[in-house]
Amino acid sequence: MSESFCSCLAKKIYPSLRWGSEGTKSHKYLPRSTTIDSESDIPLKVVLLGGGIVSMVAALRIKELRPDYEVSVVVKDSFPSFSTGGIPFYLAGNVPGGHTSLAHHTKDEILARGVKLYLETTALSVNKEDKTVLLKDNTDSAEFELPFDKLVIGTGSRPVKPKVPGVDLPNVFFLKTISDMCSVEEHLKTGNPKSAVIVGGGYVGLEVSEALVAKGIQTAVVEKNSHILKTFDEQLGLIVQDKLEAHGVQVVHGKGAKSPVVSIEPNCQHEESKLLVKTAQGAIVQGDMVLVSVGATPNSDMFPGEKTSNGAIVVNKRCETSIPDVYAGGDVVQTHHFVTGKPVYFPNGTVAHKHGRIIAENICGMHVEYVGTILTQTMKLFDMVVTRTGLSQAEALAEGFDAATVQVKENDHNHYIPPYCMLEIRFTAEKTTGKILGIQVLGDCKAEVSKRVDIVAVAIMRGVTVDEFIQMDLSYTPPLSTPWDPVVSAAQAWQRQFVELVN
Ligand SMILES: Cc1cc2nc3c(=O)[nH]c(=O)nc-3n(C[C@H](O)[C@H](O)[C@H](O)COP(=O)(O)OP(=O)(O)OC[C@H]3O[C@@H](n4cnc5c(N)ncnc54)[C@H](O)[C@@H]3O)c2cc1C
Image (cartoon, rainbow, N blue to C red; front, side, top):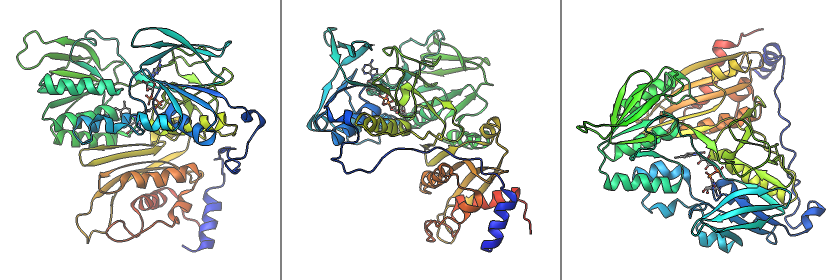
């Protein structure tokens, strides 16, 4: 296609460029030693609540920018800076270094960076007038106050606990913290479970199903929707279900019931398993243990400012809360969608890392805004990778986009160098503008599925059109790709189907 034809096509078919984000009015790229505003001349006392991604990323970044600031991190347990994302893989036996190797930074490394740690200490409340936080030492229940100039709330989320009978029974587990992980590990070692029921077919539940299968445990997943992985379209959800079933995982669907499970009961007969999970549709699924993984809810009880109805702290793009000098980020806040601009609750590590850095830089006197999330997500399940970014067809239509989607199969690399893998791709773009809206890809874990989706994530965040994307200068060598990368081929399929060629 000649350049002139291409630009004519673009003018003719994509008249309106109604995309756009204000973007970030952020770094001034001043030398590190340069003070950005006068307030930041004064060394500040910064207190960070929580020892997860937001607080640790922020604390270490503050120390990088302003070593003179007094930085204290308050952590409810003894595991600062641990990788929650590693939990399912630890349980599967894929973390040879033991649970301590899940720490991004050891306690000694954190202390060596000049950050003070209050471990086994729970934040109870924030006094916005006095600028203090009330803390409780978990070892002796003694309460004490800590003053702050700037406060960061990075207390994350906890698993949603459905209000169903039996949810507190022994052998019913939730999985969020390292302590939760250790409880499950202990049960796997000493309880000798032969079967398990996972309530919730989201990515955490599915990753854990693989871990349990690896331990030889007969596993069932109970999902309330008509397909597992509700952030993916049904077409891909069903392929993932086939993969689970091929590995012996039973999948039990609801039909969109409010709660997939009506009760968890002890199995009085105790013939085959210890617990019975009863679903809204009348199914009874047996398991020696139950893992409930049906979503996350913010740990925001200590925060006295503006929150949403689900308890998420309301923040602006700088991660400032409604209380002056109090910042919040990660799972404890409501964030916003990059494309739609609408508020969204997306408890994901990718968001938390960015919030932590942005909070630190704003505290140190910069002006940095979070541009928003496009809900990029990836998971490895057995030998398969399932990845998505942007809006699915259904989500795009619900947001009022004139969206269209193609589903194609593409080789990950040239067929003459076996083994090659087939990628299943759903590619969504807006018909009126040609802007890429989203992509979902499923394929073998050797096929660089998630990095391919990441290319599209960048394209979406830069407002790239299908025409422009097809011309992107991506790499190619026969053992690794095809001359047109599979995601570009999907864009071409979309163009063939939805773009009317004009002279
Ligand atoms: C099993 C699992 C797997 C996951 N896998 C991925 C993945 O692969 N990719 C991804 O992007 N995301 C993943 N996530 C999500 C990701 O872990 C979270 O989004 C992320 O950890 C949120 O970071 P955060 O800093 O907001 O909160 P967290 O990392 O949860 O940290 C919260 C901290 O606050 C502490 N705390 C809580 N209440 C108090 C209190 N009152 N006082 C003091 N301290 C308190 C907690 O002990 C903890 O240290 C996964 C989550 C789970 C549960």
